Image 1: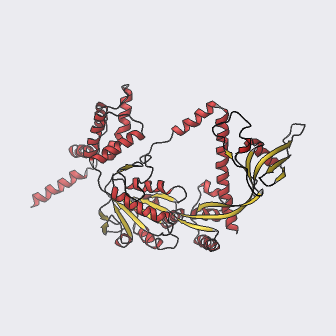
Image 2: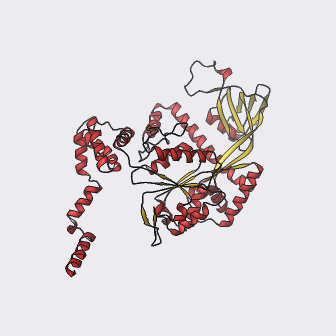
Image 3: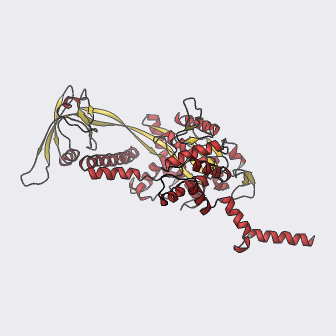
Length: 495
């Protein structure tokens, strides 16, 4: 089908680009020691984010939460509930469910969602969205939510490709005497049962020279694209050289015939297929970022084609996860759309997070728990998070100090834990790096109590900032507290 021919080259193009970049990195690192250091330095430059220490949900095989595991601390009940949802997603049998993670600020709601994303891996689509993003996009609110939904639904497309797989016996390349690029050559491949000679064109000769393919290598050639993949060295040639690099991989000589049919699996999401088929540039529109609004007719045709593939066994639907943070920022129109979208056949599992109590539904004057309409709340599984205990705060601070590569004394950690208990956990985490900078200025190897006290006096928390505003409200512009007190005084005088 035309749609399959459009999507498959996109997936193959991405994989080929990644394959060539990795191969170039291997060649670069194996030839120049200076460039090895440069590559390693790049890996050290990874940014440390608020949730970069999260590796998963920290559950055992029975879905029981460990006290400290994979960067997660505490919230055992919430993590176990998230683990049940995770198992439901991994079975790929249930979709169209909504989950709400509700709790006070700083109780690990986003961390649980990030843990679920890490545990799912790269095969399952996971889309993160903030509630306020819907109103800042150059498209309608419902179109933005539709695109987010379709980004969270994967399509696993299977197709058979013809390949040639064998061990290189001999390579003959005819080089012109005038020094021009070689345009003709021959290569002999063999398996355990047969041996065949193939003619080489200019592009294949360039690939062979670039990848440094030689006799004794096991390779595969994709007949449709002509791409050559190096699998490794043959075990029969393992004793040809005394010195072998640590990255040298030995594989067995292939069995059977040289030409084989191999099943290739491409995983894309529905939104990518929408963009490819609604833009003249094809899959290049994904890199341009110009998605815009997509017509409903295009989506209907794609849904019909995907359903046809499913019946023929060419594709499978992979229900993913859509995570909407700060869901109370959505308005009544968005909530009405979510009610309908969750009932669709091809719907992902929607996980929402909020820190609001009973508040107004945006766009109305009505109050509701978490600022979400009651009919949508009735469709949700609600997971509640609890405030962290002092012991859990200490464990989290230890993990963050290790993640940010900061050495601290026990006294400094105790003081920071006390600050986190009396103020907020986020404020205590923010003080780790700035305290380390103060310690470095005084040439110290560890962060001590005096460094924590110094940054505590330099950077105020919410409680001290609020107290300061109350004391000096007259000095600030547009002080509503003073106006309220004046109105109360007038009411007392009138009485």
